[in-house]
Image (cartoon, rainbow, N blue to C red):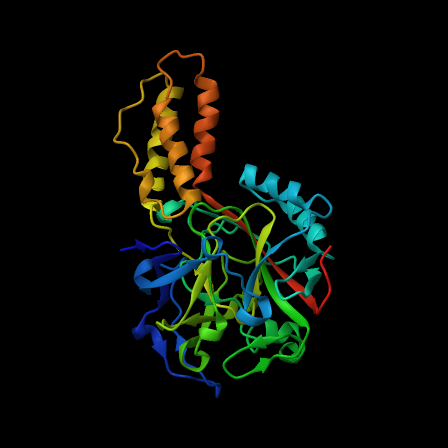
Length: 379
């Protein structure tokens, strides 16, 4: 069940099930979460309805070093925005696309709301991921396909600073070098951060939500989790476990998202510390139905058959302007489906395919090393 208020969406988020919380081990504080199969299934999670504030509706702002995340504008360096647009329109990302995106981001300066500048000094080759997610969990392509994984169903943080492979890669110095907050270690002074840049290419559906880390009781609700990376990252067998974090729900936790991101926007958040995940916007079930109906209409028009009549889509069920607009376009496409032999069929088919594509969330996730420069302005 989902409900809507003016600036806050109440929607279910996926947390650890109580029976999957295990006792501590290896002498480290903090409980563990039992490893489940990938991709994670709804029955492996505990769904809790959370109030998620829309920063675009409230005009609110967060800061990376205060809340653990921030929405920043990525500068258009070396044709970066053009490359993002190419990936969005094609729905695929190849090696040359990855190289171009890394070139565009390396050396970029992003302006923070607190007046500081985030200088991107390195973009990792591993971890540049294109995600395509269907509305209302609609399956797309092959489930778990490495090059196009779905949106993350579980609330998580991406790396334990004392875990694999980060601890080994940094030769045990990562916690001393990078700023972070954890169960048993923290570094609040370093200007060096390991960050995720989550760049939405289009996101009328399945947006990213992030927790205000100030509202997290880490000792109680942050859990060690061993993530199998087969089918997610290209690693050797001995490196196929990634030590990350899963979380328990608590009503005190505060959640945020943006409903009106554009190409060139990016969520920037602490890889080592910040809980995040995807959620379904109320009305996505209507978008999924419209996606199906328009698909059926395309098949009929291509076969020279009449388009079957259907009940109108409930545009007003959508909780955000972006989703309402996308559903309205699906309805317009259905209303204007050409009759058999209509010379306008080719133009309609192009519009119909674009309308279906618009309700698929596409995003690129990048992992980067960044330096925080206080009091500097971005270029």
